[in-house]
Length: 426
Image 1 (cartoon, rainbow, N blue to C red):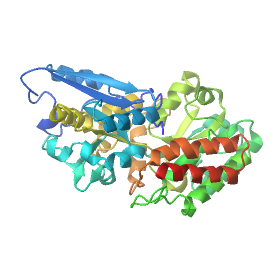
Image 2: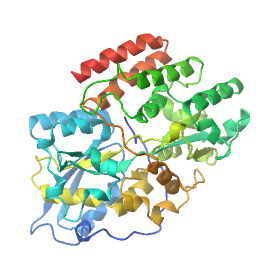
Image 3: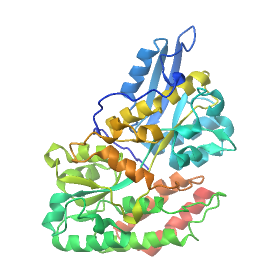
Image 4: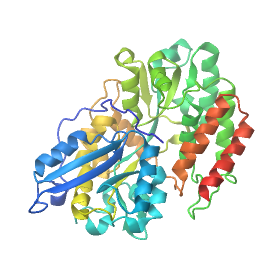
């Protein structure tokens, strides 16, 4: 769930701004009020907003923003729901991860309708259709979309070459055409290498899971994990590959996992766009040119991650909060956030902007914006996330897969998954 983690590496360098979307998106376009306005903003991990907040304040001298940033997504959302229940304590603008969005939508009355209080020219059709659709319930728009996580595959070129596998982006595409092809290539790799094929069973399973048309819940919020054969099929494939030695058995975002990028502990990494910054930060300058990214991905692509900015009804300045949220999620700012952290824009205009598409990511030697824009177009519709979805992934399936890596049988661990999911879904 911690989709950004320490995504500090720059994904692109900007050469300029793109055309403004309208007067109400321009923070200097009108005075918020006669007196000073104090706003609070709550986010988790890395949204790339530090410089943007300073820019907003400079354009709006009577607005001061306090940014409360939590290091991990799980604790952040626990606090969010606690404060929702208490009726106080939330920031004026809060970030919501897609895995927790359904829980928020079930409490829609506690959030403002941004179609009513937001800038008049900010319409839901600015975003990818499926993105704005995720945050809409009964005609009420709960959140402005920040980023999406189109999937590509990252890999170590030097390690592929040493194992006798093709290493150029076009040559590796057959290896990543399907999940069966991916795991078959992993068998060949570990025969010739002391390193693992992938970092973590949970990371592979999560990527596979996000590609499914139906996830843990159906659209009526019924838990279907036990009856959804696709989920069990993915479980069987991942645990079988792990049993053959393909996993490095690392817990994502742990110190050991971070070090694994630099030491060459694994050769491939599922790469939503925000992962590029993580790899650069952890692999370091000494591995520049060794890591590559290709637009091939088993099963054709998918989305992993993405968030929204919402305005709780607790806010004493809801219209000013909505204006800040609209500005932070405007195309210009989404492109700047991508440059800062690799969080890929969810706005249509931003995805088509030359400032996003043309720059080359020097670390990976590829036009990252162009590559991920193509991957984003492969996502026809995001998977529906039911109540408790994020908690099931974070607290049930991932720990169960880690237990398999430590010796628990896949069948026993699957039983734990079913029991844990049912407890959360009650």
